[in-house]
Amino acid sequence: MNARTFKEVRRTYGFDEVAIAPGAITINPELADIDFNLDGMTFSAPVMASAMDAIVSPESAVEFDRHGGLAVLNLEGVQTKYDDPEEVLAEIVASPQEEVTKTFQRVYSAPIKEDLVGERVRQIKQSGAKCAVSVTPANTKRLAPLAVDAGADVLVVQSTVTTARHKSRSIRGLRLPELLEMVNVPVIVGNCATYDVALEIMETGIHGVLVGIGPGAACTTREVTGMGVPQVTSTLDCAAAREEYYRRSGRYVPIVTDGGIRTGGDLCKSFAAGADAVMIGTPFAQTTEAPGQGCNWGMASPDPILPRGTRVNVGMRGSIKQVLYGPSSKSDGTLNLLGALKTCLGYVGAFNIREFHQKAELIFAPSIKTEGKFYQLGMN
Picture 1 (tube, rainbow, N blue to C red):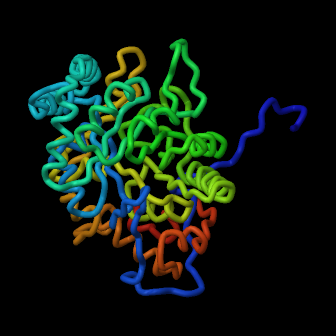
Picture 2 (picture 1 turned 60 degrees about the horizontal axis):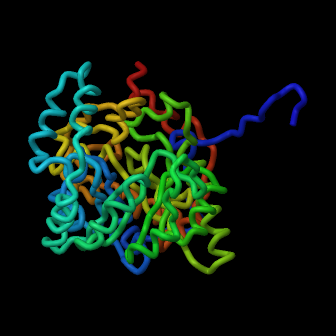
């Protein structure tokens, strides 16, 4: 370390700073297999919808399943606090911007009704869809068994920052190996952003890791706390942990890049950096099926002490099907995300996601979005 420097600052990369170099061999996009495998379950769309009240309801989760993806229902939001969540959602959407944080804090202060946990899961399962649910570590022991008993297929344990060695004043915190014995379903844990933490989480026996701290459009964690690592670097580091864990154990634990993905280009760069799937929020908040009615908000927005999110008006751009598969009436990359992914695999000559991990070369390219785009950017 430089004697004149207290700390070295590591260079990290976000989506807008890198590009994917084309391969030496190309294939037709329809030959590319983009399936996502999670502990024996296969999804034709390697995409998860974020566990946010503005994005996932039982109805939108069923629709998402129809198109091959996995939507995650938040068990600590309005769906389990209110018998009629639509009325509460409408109140949030109608709240003046200067009052919305107070509205969040009042609405979300209501207690969770445990009977609604099973009811919401059954709503999804009765349609034949796979059901994924999200809980925070503090409520996992109480809510996870209720959801699993009702038929939940996947459990997501999610907080802003997750480690395998969280310390608190409680006598017994959440121990992941004990949780795995308690629930006989795949468990995805997040969020993390570094090699060491991802590796330690994998060593507990969990089935998937969420990667990303603070990049979401409705999240203000980075502004409020200064915490976060740009998504390309986060994914690269956690993918390296996955490969090391696989080398040691022979067990493959998929990583899911969560947050900051707006376009097909962002999605493709996530997979090139090593993601097995992605979790997306705002693009699905913009769908006609989203319960947020053209708005999105972070689930840390209601925190009574340190709110770390806000409501953003994102508008509507199309259906879930259009976001995933098109057809697209826009040229900005926000629709037909999976068509973009298959095309990118074709450019690199990769027949599947694992082959894409190996073949895709990421290059530092800070001018990638502006080079030659004089007229597109309105610089005349």
